[in-house]
Amino acid sequence: MAISYTLKTSTRARRLRLAVHADGRVVVTAPALMSRSFVDSFVEQRSGWVADALARFRRRAPKTIIEAGPNAFAKYKSQARSLVLARLNHFNAFYNFRFKKVFIKNQKARWASCSKKGNLNFSFKIALLPADLADYIIVHELCHPFSDEPLKSLLGAGRPHSAPLAHPPPSAPLHPHPLTPTTTYQQTGVC
Image (cartoon, rainbow, N blue to C red; front, side, top):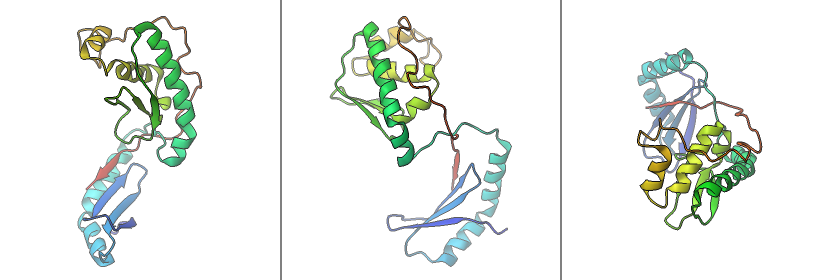
């Protein structure tokens, strides 16, 4: 079975990488000095896996994809900052926790994090989440630097993912700038 794929070469790559994307793209990343015939052979050997991955993606229902990359970051950064600052002020009027600075970043693996210095870091993608999920992340990061006790009291005794969030009265709008996702979460199969 002949497979159509995009070849990316990299001086940093040490081995071949084969990725199948939800939109049907097949991308091979190879070390810069590797021969094209070796790459073709590699893809041909894994053609069954590629066909299975493509079939899995076709069977799945379409999902919401959140844009990623520098263009999306530039597009949503200010909206994410407005949302995060508004919700931090809203919740902090109730919880009264201290934090230093707020940063909006293009984080790939985390929705948010906090530093030892008390700075709060949020992914720009938080602006594209439903309001209740964005609030959950914001409250979690707001409570994070202090201890587990405030977070446990806010979330209840159950598992944090299933416990209701103790909200202050809704005086601030949930999303000052309504946003809608423009693409969908992209699942990737990697060999």
